[in-house]
Image 1: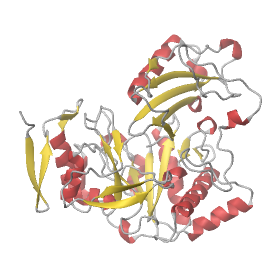
Image 2 (image 1 turned 60 degrees about the vertical axis):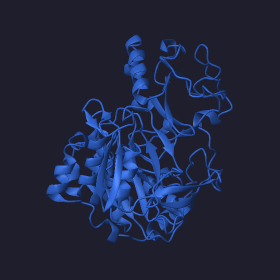
Image 3 (image 1 turned 90 degrees about the vertical axis):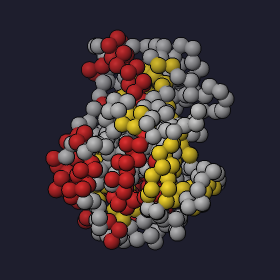
Image 4 (image 1 turned 180 degrees about the vertical axis):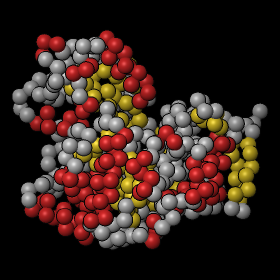
Length: 447
């Protein structure tokens, strides 16, 4: 029996929604059709974040609690009214990615299982010059929401002081996003260089609350993730529903709303009414493009004072002026290779030595499964867990060709050596390489 379809008339086009009654959010009961109708109810705002931009399709074909896969190339079987643009990537490969310009195309993308929308910071007409600088605030485990908002306000002030207009939104996950439209006159390398300068300035102004350190073992507080401005990186756009159990939404805000906002208040149920009542707080963003020269001048000053380039994502070629792309604990000649978990050939640092006492707790298909494994580890080691600081809990999102998995490691540096538990069997033992292929590339944390 063929799957049932719902035909919607959107922007003068008949768009088919397949399996409209499929549950996408089990806890709330929202279906695929509910997700489509949500996006249509906020279409003007959602389109403002994606219109004319090539996007990666992050597809949750089994619902928001299922495993997602990333699809860069537009499906070969697509309507002739779906536009594409060719992008090149650091690997040297190219892909024709989907470009959305109206509500019908938006509906078609959501029907593919795209719970959230992940556009590049460029327009299809000029894919080499970003017109957005994106500030992604990524808290280390244990950091509370008030501290995230504190850093957001500092980042706003830095952007303002350097000639750019800051536009805030919740991430819909643990962090916070701030966008600034920029004149499309600089390439990705310069935009990222400006983002590095901004991150270091935020850290300078709020050293106890924020960090610009790339390596997780060096981080504290809220990480200002400058590498989200490197080529090939995407961030969930405004009005994106996120794959959380309560169907939270990455919601654009006014700055006067930021100090008192709560991320759980913005969901697939509440945001449409908010949008109908107040409209889109980001309505003027397209008219706010500013220059990048002031931040690039700041970057030059930081470099003249001895600051090197900051580490790039692992799949990029080594850049001129970049420091060693090796975790600080692995740079030292002294140290031992942490032992692997029983039955594993590689441990928490692979086969490289480390001066840090690291153990591995979980390798899981989903973050929720990994965190559940961590909870079991805590129960078995009640005297050890209180000694760990938030930055000692290393939750890594690992990305393969088309999906992600989660690894959790613990740094026992704050635990007296005699009290450190040994490397034990993994609480969750997912094999991300089953079925062939090599180990997936590592992804920095995302909001």
